[in-house]
Image (cartoon, rainbow, N blue to C red):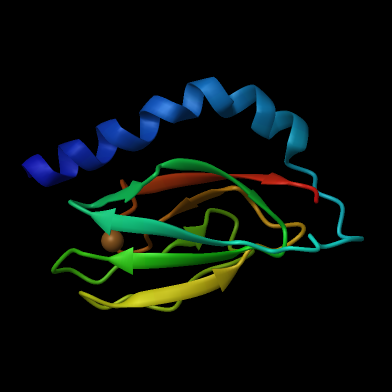
Length: 121
Ligand SMILES: [Cu+2]
């Protein structure tokens, strides 16, 4: 239960500060993709995504690294993108879609929340 409470507290911190930026930038244009797409690691540990909020560009690759015992996913709240199930100790990569939803969660543990601030390249 303690782990779940930590999972709630961590993601919420960054959300308020970035809410305005997300509201502005959420409709991403699909025309171009970054010339130099990046690979960005997001660690899942203690039932939380770290960093909970991160700036990315369409075309970047996110690698979710599961350091928990339990399986997790990273799934857009509107279903526009998702990882496969990420087993304990495994990684799953997902491409940041041009028109993807920034808010995401774990479908097995919906209190686990993260946010992508998706910029246009
Ligand atoms: Cu989970």
